[in-house]
Length: 167
Image (cartoon, rainbow, N blue to C red; front, side, top):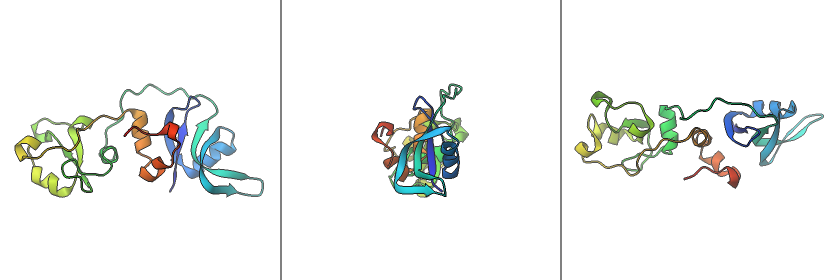
């Protein structure tokens, strides 16, 4: 199922919605298509609409200020692009840098994507104790970066340059 990015009237990312919801918002004149899938259109008897990839709301929606993106296992995997933080192979799980048994929590700065082998090898130790080093330090994405990262690599690559996610 394709996802469509929804921008506020001020061009800040708000959410992702299904393609069906995006088309409904455009047809109800609540949003305009900012960026479309090339060559794909939605057609009906009275309608000929480009298939939206990014839509912008016509009216500004006031959103409570979010200082932080909510932590989730899926979010960590997406942030690290499904690459193991220790060896760079495909990651299928999340590893706590400081294990939970030693006081480490479920936070952006304490978790990295990991392959099952490295997660098992590190076990209940810190990377230094296990003789392992992180390829990249974990970071906390901003709420808008987390939203753009959630689109997936193929969808992100097709976004306009002015909406690109910093590497």
